[in-house]
Image (cartoon, rainbow, N blue to C red; front, side):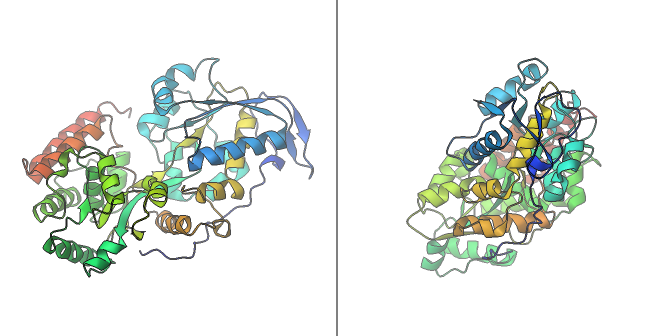
Amino acid sequence: MRTTRSLQAAGLVAASALVLAACGGDDNGGQATGDDGGQATSGGTLSLWHYEGENSAMGIAWDEAMRIFEEETGATVEFEEKSFEQIRQTANMVLNTSEAPDILEYNKGNASAGLLASQGLLTDISDAVAEYGWDEQLAPSVQTTARYDENGVMGDGAWYGIPNYGEFVMLYFNEDLFAEHGVAIPETYDDLVAAMDEFVANDVTPLAMSGAEYPAGQLFYELALSQADRQFVNDYQLYENPVDFSGAALSYGAETFSEWVQAGYIGDYSAGLSAEDMGTAFIAGDYPMLYSGSWWYGRFVDEIDGFDWSIDTFPGSDLHPGSSGNLWVVPTASENKDLAYQFIEITMRPEIQALLGNNGGVPVDADPDDITDEKSEELITVFNEISDADGLAFYPDWPVPGFYDDLVGALQQLINQNATPAEVLEQLQLAYESGLDNVPN
């Protein structure tokens, strides 16, 4: 799908956070009556942790949400900025103690939020979700990472978190290089292959790539997804059925990736390149295309000034790597759950969603009229199209612990051409099945 300049309606539900009756089960005092007769909380303290940079889209949005929260509730926010690693490494030790915050940002997925939920460390917020209508604001594919069953497997069961933003993987195009070599921006898979052939014929490597980090694995997964359906994703990510790595989808992914290296679409020198190497090379104008995530988008807006660029989804595929962003979760030990829910509600308001959208983020429920930045509008349009079509397929390294390293090693072998696709797939099959032994089920 090509980018259009008009945003899709996002199914916006009017936010009215503080006038809604607070959900039960809270032990915080200080209830007061709102101006319109609804209940609002006055006074109290909300302890809050997150790990977003001050100048990031999320950091800007959360800061404004905290200001609004204090102004409207009369409560005080005690904010502690943590690093991602701090929270990842200590959450399961801290969240069942009196040191637990009332609300925090936490990573999604089976091995993260799902694990804490299965250990009883996170609050089942399903009643709050129904009360505030968050389920009506979030597309089904975005909801997946917010819900976990009793074993901590995402996709079904109770709600344990709310995401406010999304992310996905796409193609970036250096339009000036396309024009310089007389190549049309591809709209179909055949166009893409033809364009890469033309660049190779002109001694230009078409795709920026990193084999030392996640990008190669995400391209392999996208190629597999182009031959797959939602059931494949459910099997691979949610263990609904055994996954055969020698099956059609994953075989296509590995074989096509290897063929692209042999054809010169991917540089055979890229096995040792980092994601930063890949991104800066695209910023420098060295490559016509880059396949990577929306997390690059804001940086490209800031740093690319020598050429025009655009984006599009990978052609010929209805499924794409991507998911919701991280979650707001409420620890079981939280002493102010109602305040936590009211803060979450503020983060879902149109003005906060607009802040995300106009600062390089991908809001999950933005009012299209509130997005005034043209580049941001382009990004959000593509995300809405994928999300509305239930096209978010998560990430290839999510299913089992340690699979990220296995994928990186496997794709490096394909780039270096020192293993066949069948050999690589056999390695990944063994690693996947071994990792399943560590997944509660």
